Length: 289
Image 1 (cartoon, rainbow, N blue to C red):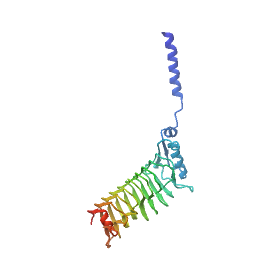
Image 2: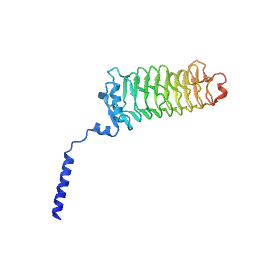
Image 3: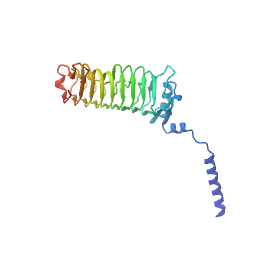
Image 4: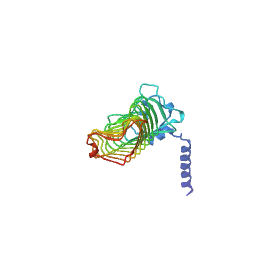
């Protein structure tokens, strides 16, 4: 019995010794293996660095991944010509933490013409020369949440496909803030928007615009180009000179209800303006004043 115990004890001692002497795994590599890559300001000189982190986190699009943009070391400042993050892999989250801010982006995020469904962008502050989100043709299940975007062009300009959620953001734009074209089953909610025109739906269906606060010079929400079966409700539109909500002649079957509109000082604007017979083929009720 003693002869069997001695070799066994020796094996156990050697195993524990080998384990204790092994070098600890690099934390960045360990996180990457779990599908998480963290970047700080010093790690990023161009959008290519963020794209490389996306490729590493998702193993070139073969799994879900998370890119954490950590602002604890200060803002992210590009010093190269590539200043737009191209999204070319699906199933990826870009998550800002500790006040992560990009100060000189061109477009914040640009969706390539590749299968890039199931993308989430959240918690970022973006000061861009063009748009915050651009592209997104027929992309599904895109979540844009709790971001702040300051742009001279549109905040979001996309042909979204199905299932976009744009919620809890602060958008400031010198033109139209959010434009969705031919989107289905999407939500624009609980955003604070300041722009010339707040939200435009073009050819959309089953898209819901609700509980937003919109400061707009011209119109708060526009429905155009055969937008159908969508809802605009419980929004607050402030400072408009033309109309809180505008419907062109091609839209029908939409519900416009419980919106509150305040015109610009000294201006007589419309709460809801419906061209020709649009008022008869859409459901418009209980809007104030």
